[in-house]
Length: 143
Image (tube, rainbow, N blue to C red):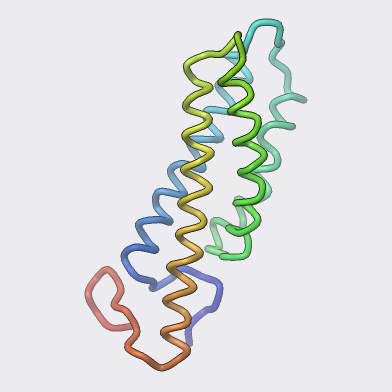
């Protein structure tokens, strides 16, 4: 029985998008940590409170990412828009740093890869439910 809302056994495109999502998600957490503690803009002081405010909204989605929950990915897309807005604001600031551009790129990558993972997994599920030829998994075997 297929587990709805999970990417286990999906096509190569969905698995590729999920891998990109996981790498960019963890990289975004690392970049947020770096920009809070070491490469912060002038006038900012590193603090645990600021770090938690910046990182906690993303950490909420870790269980959903580990469970491969598509609904969590949809909500992650909404939260990524906030990070995109903040990253663009910092990148266009006169006090910008090179890492601010990396923040913008990572927030876009997380958003697009999560969105494409949801799309391709949903297409796979519709094909499986409708009884049409189910796409093969990356190993080439029919699922």
